[in-house]
Length: 331
Image (tube, rainbow, N blue to C red; front, side):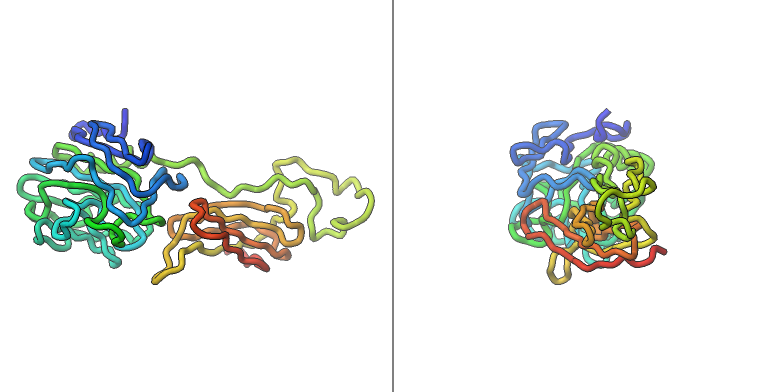
């Protein structure tokens, strides 16, 4: 069963996710209402997603909103962001705007206000408007984000994802992510919404990512007296089983840091980070920074020094390097 069809109380009207993106368009898995994407496929960590280019993503056909319905957007913003807009060029009607303090706003035809609050930027947000003919309420990441508010604050049509004009920071940018969106008719309970979120997150989960230890051709620790010893080595220093690769660089130290895009303020990036031994010029491990830009390498020999290199898979920036790093003690 597909994630968009996993809750009995909700009848899907339209559904899109990053797994069904081709030829520059998100393919509607219920009908034929495509979304034109200004962006591309992002690294699937921690979820399969798309990045943007600070431009609106229009629907092929605007969708009418009436009766009992749920309008959902699963996104990750690193600055002010809207999930949906009503019409290109119309700044008076928009859906699910989150500001820097976490406050969520909803407006229709110039009328509206704050309707809830949510987590900080840089966190994947499963946001849904749950609407009846008389009221509406916002759901966000496993719970209600605020109290019910007037139905008049919700526009009667939705035209696309993002904001109403090109180049505006409210649109999805290169460091931000779109994961999924959908429209359903029906009246869900809180448990129903949680079940829908769980199914969606499970379907979009990226492949397992962890620290990868490189297979090494040399078997002796750079700190041992035998490392540069000419000729053959004593038998007790011969190779150990391959599962014990970290004997060369293992210890009780760690190196941590952040990967960010320079700006005001700097924005966190999800990027690959490589750890090299400066003694041997050997790749020791690699990992990815998380949604907050943080990375960490653990269980390193504190007597050695290392170089960290972060690369940009989108090829927008050159690699950044930090050398002469010495691990600090692990807590």
